[in-house]
Length: 161
Image 1 (cartoon, rainbow, N blue to C red):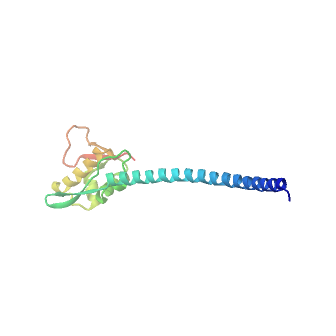
Image 2 (image 1 turned 90 degrees about the vertical axis):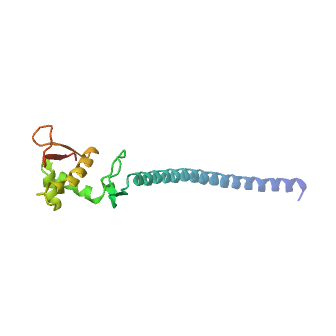
Image 3 (image 1 turned 120 degrees about the horizontal axis):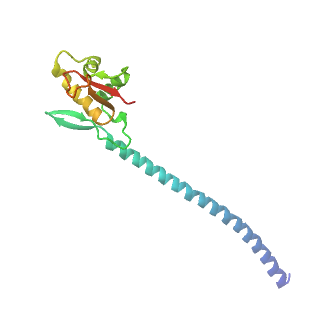
């Protein structure tokens, strides 16, 4: 075999190898591009998960000491308040108010909760809880007779949802 034939044969081999490597390089670049996109998606999902966890922690019930007892505080409002972030007692109150056919008296909620409604002092803690919920926009409150003064059991609560 002459030198020219060897050079031509080697060049043909290299041309075939270059074509194969070009195809392989295209496949590798395509796969690398897909991995870059997948990485971006995973980072965005991780950021969303982190934001959701931080938001849940921000509205989670917080324990505090009141008169030497540990109590759960009603959480501050968030952009999208979650009823599930409320302590059980507050959720039960909302359930009773929403279950009413119209405005619901504090006394009626107290009866539903099994409180002694004959004694005014027994309803004051309930009235305070209901006021906190009304202040946070869970429902509206107002006197029953249209007067600006609120009587002993006259506060009415009307559910928004």
